[in-house]
View: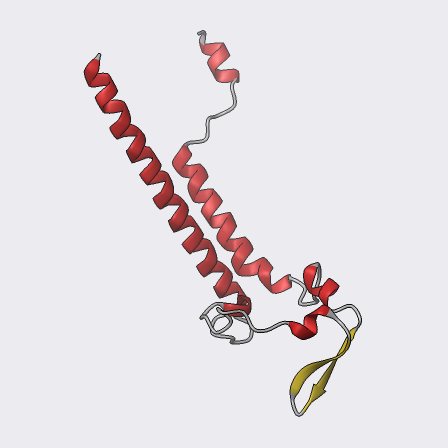
Length: 131
């Protein structure tokens, strides 16, 4: 290959740089943009609330009318530290919860990919030894 041809190619992004940039962007999105997310119910929440009104009785929200959501109960993990996209239910901690979620997801992904790569290396090594 000539020098002119190699100079015309766009620079190759190194895998490590890409992964670091990806992690930084994911953390910024989770940590900052999550504060701009809408708190209004949508999708399934909105569909299950059709036919009901939310009223406050003695400081507790209750549903009046007929809708599917009246039969809903709390999720088994509703008391977990990151329930409702907040840290221990504290207000304005959804960015921190998002960052924790990204870090846990990245850790699981890195661990899974490491195990897959390790399994491939061990399965290829015996095959090469037989050649």
